[in-house]
Amino acid sequence: METKDFYKKTKEFFKKHGKKIAMITIVLCLIAIATPFTCYKIVEWKAKERMFSNPNDIPYNRVGLLLGTNPKVKSGRDNYYFIYRIEAAAELYKAKKISKILVSGDNHIKEYDEPECMKQALMAKGIPEEDIVLDYAGFRTLDSIVRAKEIFGQTKITIISQQFHNERAICIALAHGIDAIGYNAKEIRGSRSHLKTGFLRETLARTKMFLDIYTGKEPKFLGEKIKI
Image 1 (cartoon, rainbow, N blue to C red):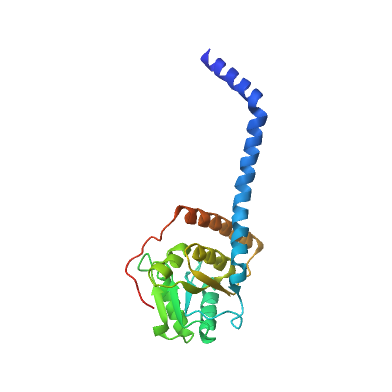
Image 2: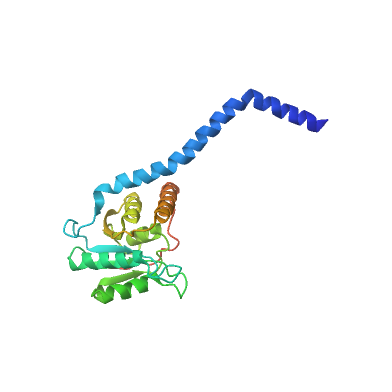
């Protein structure tokens, strides 16, 4: 008897409020779709005037922040994100648009050392060791940016990565009081499915970026200050 009453009341409730519930559901779905897209476009817009692809056009900053990545992909092949970022950093340095390169990457285990790999690659390009500074706690883009200011004392930097990454990094920097510009490393021309996956991943990353900024997310590690 109780079960029948429950179903009867439920049926009456949805009959009475069904249209309102459907409208609310549709609105919530639209918000869920629109919010990440809006976040993506805001980041793109805020960084637009701070992006450079030609070393002749970019202003001089003493320190270039090179964002880390693995030299190899999961299959064991060369990672062209890594190769192109190294080329971009070397290009800027040789054009005398930066004097020091702060390499920030992940080194959470002994066998995985992004900063050291990037340092060796930079030296192979002719960059003097004394002009390369390593940050071993750049576990995320946010960590790399905030640590550049809080640990390495930089309030004006040139960020070096691919354009999509630079746009997000610049927005994080601006939110933390850092005057940042970006030098775009060469992009990777992937398959159509790869590009779609990358767009989705970056859209979610930008959405999370706004959440991190709003909640005051801090780097995993800070520590003693290091002078560059």
